[in-house]
Amino acid sequence: MPAEPRLERPYTLNFVGDWGQANFHRICGWLTQEFCSRAGFGSRSATWSVRDDGICAVDMIQSGEADLAIATPAMLMPMALKGEGFFAARPAPNLRALAVLPQDDCMVLALDPALGISSYAELREQRPAMRLATSRDDGTNFIGYVAQLFLTAHGLDAATIESWGGALLCDVRPDQSLDRFAKGEANAVLQEAIMTPWWAELIEGGKAVPLSAEAPALASLRESHGFGRNDRPAGFWRGIDRPIAALDFADFLILVRDDMPDDIAYLLTWCLVETRSAIERQYRHLPPNRSPLSYPLVPQRMAATTVPLHPAARRYYNDAGITAGHNSSG
Image 1: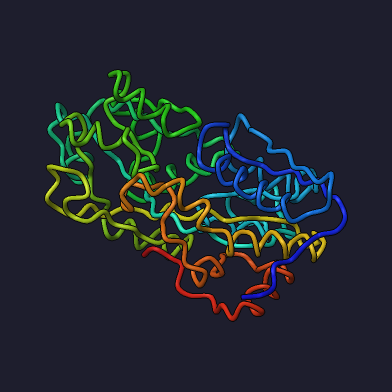
Image 2: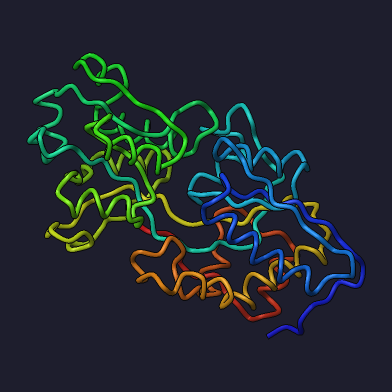
């Protein structure tokens, strides 16, 4: 293990978390304490909460407004470097990574059992008036962007759903979509955060039927966008005795700019890897397959980022003898 780094001078960091009550803020809190306890007297950090989703954090890193952000799913971030796909109007070529925090998640469509539909083929054939709760595809929301691609790959876009007498009910966060479904405002939901109690209560309570994604649709998304698949095994939800094929929506990527000072990037990376037990303890009350952060954190997986490592982060991993291992789910 490399010697514990210390920073003699004070340093102020600006982090970008989430909406305020989810996992990114918890991770930022852990990293704040570990960094500041090893930095000069007077060091501090602030964590931004955001109203919107996804691209705001990337924009703040690219512009230099923030020093560190967390983004998910990790599979989207390579597009930012070249300004492709979701990032066509807002490229972020200066993005670099310190680590990835592996997280097992996927995107699933579930329907009200009253519709009597258990497959996409039946859905396209029966054409129900489907009020679909999902995240908005407004150029800022990663979930909404992936959801629209997922629907289109299955022959279901907004125009098709509306032609059946249905509608898209779009919010920002997964909990908002699942709450709409639980209240009966929606009879279909397409979301991630699959390990949460919100999903379990709906499916295990017999209020929602998860549909298995179609293999050609998943293959098309891999071919066109590099998206993987991440199936739920049989029994993941009580009462669902078959595997559910699903689109990957995994992993928290720790992002910085390429010009972050080397000693800061090295210390942050050291903290992420060497003090990982501190964040693991905050999730161990949950079974591993129900935890929004996978544990135990394995350094080889943490080094397997989807965008290039900051040079100082790479130096830390080399110093620690850590070779990047497999980090994709599908």
